[in-house]
Amino acid sequence: MRVPAFALIFLSLNSCNATDETRSARLPSSPCAERSFDDSRFIVCRSVGAIEIVSGARTFNDLSTKLGQRANNVGFAMNAGMFDTEGKPIGLMVEDGHEVHKINRRKGGGNFHMMPNGVFLIRRDGSASVVESDAFKPATDIAFATQSGPMLLMGGKLHPSFDTDGESRYIRNGVGIDRGGTPVFVISREPVSFGKIARFYRDALGASNALYLDGSVSSLWDPANGRMDAFTELGPMIVGFRKAAVSAPGREVRAKP
Image 1 (cartoon, one colour):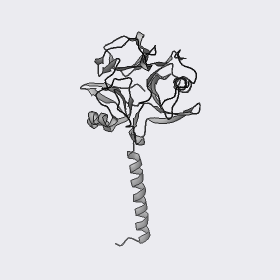
Image 2 (cartoon, rainbow, N blue to C red):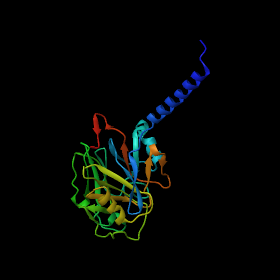
Image 3 (cartoon, rainbow, N blue to C red):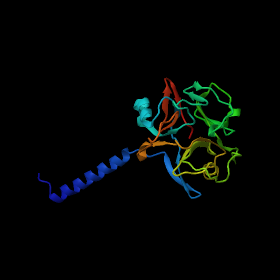
Image 4 (tube, one colour):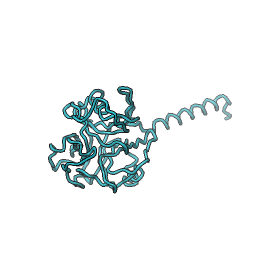
């Protein structure tokens, strides 16, 4: 039976629409979204699945290779704190329950030693905290941890060395815990001061405790939005997965919603 030309056109259009809808359905939504605050823009990322801290990769491309098939499940990734010239952490680093580097409470120069500095940690049950380094206590239920500095917020108060909006400006990123206990990761879209990113965490995101991760090397991998920063080598990285990810046989580490 011959199909009328108008019917073929109708079927063709429906086929195109169905294809477009299918393609849209297959595209993962990004866990990262842009927010504006005090005339600056920030990208805010929240993981809906597991969060891990990974060492041994210097770029996001290296990280993707290291993760293998799990790379397909990455929602976002970002640099996870201070490191040396070889990309090794200079402070506490716990990866899948294994202490890669012990806590560093030495005095010194630079942002890391702008006391108090702090630790971002994830427990085996998925709960997360940001604590001052002096208050950190090792525990068997800590699955992942990274030490960086300085603290941005402590009990809702800015670090005592910060001005409200100081003159030092860099692309900066950090991690804080919102009112619901969920870790929130932020990277600025343009250079900002310590004080501004700290106030963004407190006033826009409702965080009481937040930790600075870095400045001049701050980088983001946001697969859904086609972003993979590659302008410098990194050290340890935080990875937020789109759903629960198995870190070791028989154990899942989840981020609490």
